[in-house]
Length: 267
Picture 1 (tube, rainbow, N blue to C red):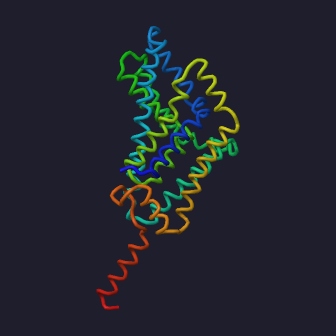
Picture 2 (picture 1 turned 90 degrees about the vertical axis):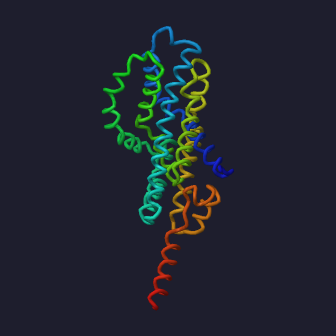
Picture 3 (picture 1 turned 180 degrees about the vertical axis):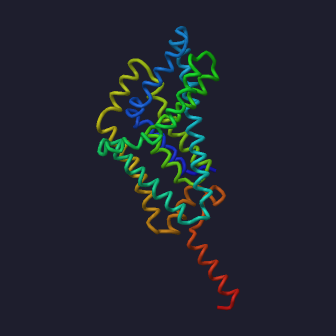
């Protein structure tokens, strides 16, 4: 069951995607246009074009959701490894803080992180070329799925947010919400798109998006600072019961096991 607190996470992820629209324009605008021109000329206008764009973007959102499921599964599988889980969450928090500063325009050097996924993106180029020109709807969905692997700092921020949920379903939903937040910028064309881009390109909008990511990064860091039970209890309240992927602190379990061991051996 999704709680009100869980909805706040999903809303925040969607806002991250929407407010980060300026970055989407820079990273995805060219590729989106290339996909448009890969269509027959008769399909490049009106509702027909919108239909194809929805297919492309549905593939992109599917990739984001699958990546979220994978990230959540990774952290969930580490729930019995205490320190490894803590370290991974800590790194996710740091990544969110740095990428938030990058989105706000305060730390441009972080753009180098986007090159991390560049080798994989280059390896996918032959597959992308084989899909062109686009003639059938399944081709468009597959092309959109490949689009989802485009190296992007904003996507990395969303992934860092998703991985802190430590539950496959919740992490997947966070990435889906993020992807839905990016849709308005990438679907709108003409005058409406120009007006939206004008708003998104304002320094205040970029800084708001960056601060939102930074706040979630700081929230993650607070949870890693050794507050233990208080933090995990907060996650328990936000995400439901332990069956949703939330566990009690490892230190408490370890203490209980030590006590049982001492009692058993008569120490």
